[in-house]
Structures are given as C-alpha cells and as structure tokens.
Length: 168
Image 1 (cartoon, helix red, strand yellow):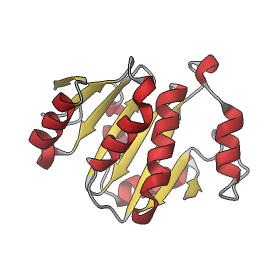
Image 2 (image 1 turned 30 degrees about the vertical axis):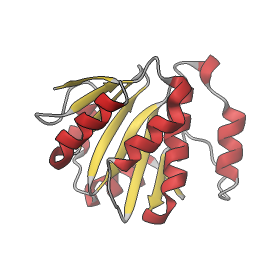
Image 3 (image 1 turned 120 degrees about the horizontal axis):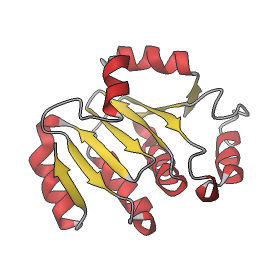
C-alpha cells in the first residue's frame, strides 16, 4: 500500500477514468443510472464481512485507490491510534489529512478490505476507485456502488445478506 496526497489522488483517479467533478457529485447523488445504494448504518458488527463482500464486487484489479475525504465527523467512533499504527507499519508517518489516498495493488486485497472495515467502524467516508468499478462509502452509513455490468449479481448477494438497499 502506498499513501497519496490529494493532488496525487486526483491524478490517479483521472488515470483510472474518473472525473473529479463526477466524484464530488457521487457523494450526494448517484453518478449513473442503476447505481446501488446499500444501507450499512446498523451493520457495524458485520463491518469486516461487509468490507470483504464490497471488495469482491470489484473483481480483479491491478490497482485501486481509496481516497478518504470524510473523517472527524463521529470522533467517538474513531481510533486514531489504531489507524496511525496501521499506517506506520507501511513506513508512512504522515497524517491522514496530509495524504488521504491509499493506493493498493491487486495482490493487496486483504489490506484494502482492512481499510474499508476501518472506514465503516470509524464512520469515515471516501471513494474506492478501480478500473472494474467504484464505490462511495459515506460517513452517514451507506455505500453507493457503481459496477454496472454486475448489478444483478450484486443485488442477489445483498438480498442473501439481508442488507437494505435501493437501486437509484
């Protein structure tokens, strides 16, 4: 995993084919017809399993950017010590606001799952961008998924997990 500044996140997002304006709108409105919004506010006890399932929707990817842009909203949920220890284990001592991007290679799926798990637990929000699809995780307890070619499969998985969702 490599940590990236906000400017580096914008450049990586563009290389993956994501326009910054559309990303900003994805936080409040669906960027595409047929996006799936999953409600996870009451699912923190299953955060690791949900993170694992969300990453599985991205199929194989050579790289993935997770760009955390919402934090500090629910301070009593955050464990900064845990996050900073995780980050320092990769040799990066910068703070999240300095380098909010986390770039993962395909073989680092477990690391991506762990970060998404922490985002859910901490009440953080941000973009998860891969060439195979994207997600927006909101601090308000929902995830917007846009992986258009797998919607039916995703809907079946969400139903089997008894997660609340809507197609936008």
